[in-house]
Image 1: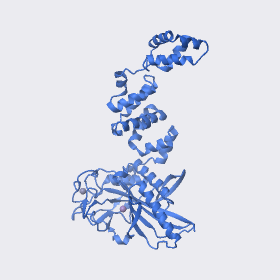
Image 2 (image 1 turned 120 degrees about the vertical axis):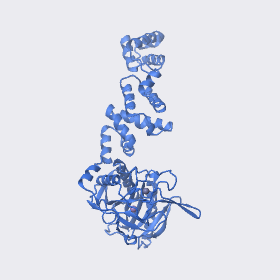
Image 3 (image 1 turned 90 degrees about the vertical axis):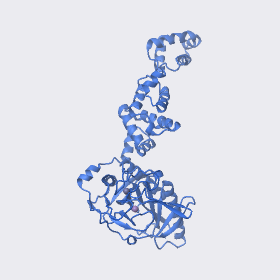
Image 4 (image 1 turned 30 degrees about the vertical axis):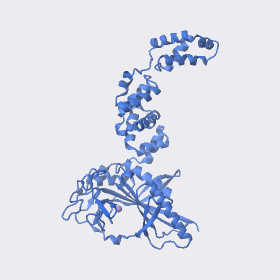
Length: 471
Ligand code: ZN
Ligand code: MN
């Protein structure tokens, strides 16, 4: 029997706002002392009133538009009730039967083929706190409690673990392009729950699925799915296909899943409408204000049209800071290949070598100026590299460095002619061979001139003047 793999994802992405979803506590508590970014609202004290964060709603709307989701004009928050020590109120404020957005889709590249995955819904909810287990004790930090999340649920349209990862990577690019989430996986800003089941090929119905909870990286998403796919395959072959849905956890270190519990159903959560928050109205004005997103697939095509390689285009799309620097320099210099070689090869290399980040990089104006000095022959391309490294280290601009180091190429005819005259005298043998018809002999003369001028003679001009002189 040939089996087919069916995968769907639930993605939680932290919305990039300064404050939490229902209070004004800061969201950037990464590295802060535990329980220092909290207030009575996000601690779920009775009598406090949650007020939705307008920026978070706007960003979720923009993301929903980027996913081509149908927006619901009226949507409601609901309480999702469960007890857990990291959930101070005893319920999560989420959305249930009236989410922000319904059906949409994402086109992504899978093995060179454009593939489409349906989106079931996108809704808003707040995050829980964090538990740390130390021996017998469990410690709880509520700094993250109340952080705004978008939950994006896909249709069961994915057909392999690798395809699921390709989809997730494209979704991450869209989150970044929409400025909806920083989607920094290392900081847990994008997390996955993956559902997987098998069915005989050709069968239309779905069989009970396994849900793998809380995967924090593309690598663990792929490995956990591969593991479950194999495990289910074996059960099917033995005639023991699962007859109920289960929830499992992925153990990164041991590279295996463990069964946590039978999968909970909506009824287990006793959803009811959140009585403290009025219906959220997504009207035309708000939809317009949220703006539109240039989709990564579209941007990639545009960069490739400009002359970039596909992986260079992807690098820009995945790094908004680098992309904006590229766009600014390109706007002035108009030569995508030269800008990409300066930024994506040389600049990133120097930043890395000197343990600096893009935040420390020279400004777009300074970088454009450097390219202009190379283009107009003030310095050679090779000298340009040296200037760039100095710009990264010292923060000075190109003109200052070129002047300080006396690096400007000698393009002035009279200065060059003086060196050329000496070169002809000092290299009489080579000149003789050249005159006897040995073209290559001229190379030695040019080399002598470059050495004599400490590399500052403009080689193009030297050739030109030398030929004139000898012709
Ligand atoms: Zn708070
Ligand atoms: Mn959720």
